[in-house]
Image (cartoon, rainbow, N blue to C red):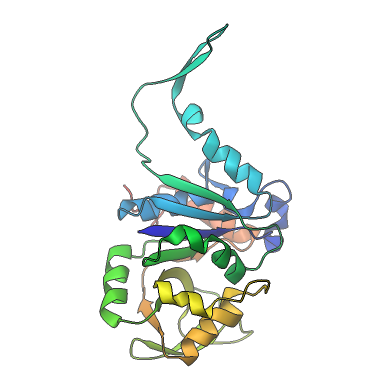
Length: 260
């Protein structure tokens, strides 16, 4: 199963750190947020990634293009027949990574539409490049399959309020993105989607946020389920959020570190 990660936003609320790098590359414990997210998916056997790049996307490309040489010993043969040899044990990250340039200013639903040809008409997962959790992705996928709807969203209860989900049982009946005041579940950002979700995406040439368009249309058709996660979830929206995550990691108390 492929996993799409939205990595293209400017991260304006974290401008202290995103002036020189894209938000998913901000480090927690000397590893980019993106690496933490991918490691969490990999723990559940989801190793095939499609990264929707945008703002300063070349930095993410360079990170993965140089990943092997940055994390292993290297032997170089110079001269007329140059050669690079990777030494030592192979890396545990047995990942396939598609690095897709989806535009510097593109909105989230349009980014997803741009990488649709890479999804092979199969069920896939989707998340944002700025949030970590200890959500059981295997259980969430099983729930998605059992519900039989086109989309499943993970509902969480964080300290702050972002996008509220109103439900009837497992069915989402209303969706508000980032209200000023709300209560209940919010959009945790870990999705499972079926190929027919494509019909809710914006048409060619249109630019649209996933939350304001496609998800609302999906709700109107009764095709969005919610998987409730009562464990750890934290986004990295502000400098204070980053400090909190960095502190948890440094104290060896990072609940999202499911891979160990």
